[in-house]
Image (cartoon, rainbow, N blue to C red; front, top):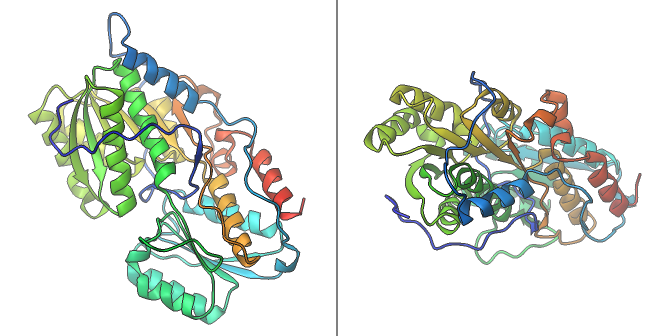
Length: 397
């Protein structure tokens, strides 16, 4: 594979095994659906390659809904937790999947009588710090942050810890040397994010039968998004030695530059037939760039995130071949399990089983593409299965 950016060494594939429950995704913005037919044909011709065959098998595995729920942990006593309050601080409450997390986290904690109070971090250190100071003043039983790296607001998080309130940092890896404990724990997003990066790479390799020329938009917003971008590049190199990869770095702070970056890359290298925006946050900007280049009908896209707007486009936009996503309602229940264990004096597990899924042209017709279905998590499998498993561990029904 030829590259125009440094590509990390291959990392062994991780598919549908035990993976972390943190979310290694960038902020997921609501995206407008693109028009177009729902049918497409393979970009390859002639005999199938071994790379294409392997990728199609891997993608088909990820495209199935989950069946039986794996073991989620050991039972523990939650009887003494009723009446307590948990403070939830997402990085930006109104963006992407965070409203889904809020709704499902409220439901999950409510099963044991724990109340949730939510404060919007507003996407910046000042707003997050203000929320954490409010939490200290409110004296909750615990604080949960979501997709806020410790390094972003270390002083504010340390103030909460010094006040005696346990802190669970969801969607962020622990700083080097920090051990998981009952008072300070992390939901490492890396391995969950790697499943998605493998999935969208497999979609491109499968569609091209191992002959793709790919533009990867690698997100630099945080350490976890950088690691996920490196994983995407490494998996493509491993799964498709005959593919060609061009890597361009993007970030939320430079979102306005993404359309011109995409257009320039395609005009410079007309051989590019696939674009992988690392997250569906960048899907609208990518589409604008394709239109500006005059190649909107010639280039196919795969991305991750699985917000309703993005998943709907798998059906309506014939150039979007796959969206791979985590199950936000399930993630909320893993977060509830972690913080409840901390309130019970336990160290939460570092990882939970993955319930990720890829949405493709082959399975999109089976989905109920409504806000209600998105909130429930039904796209990924039967929600009652993992809810029953968790409440069983908590000793409630």
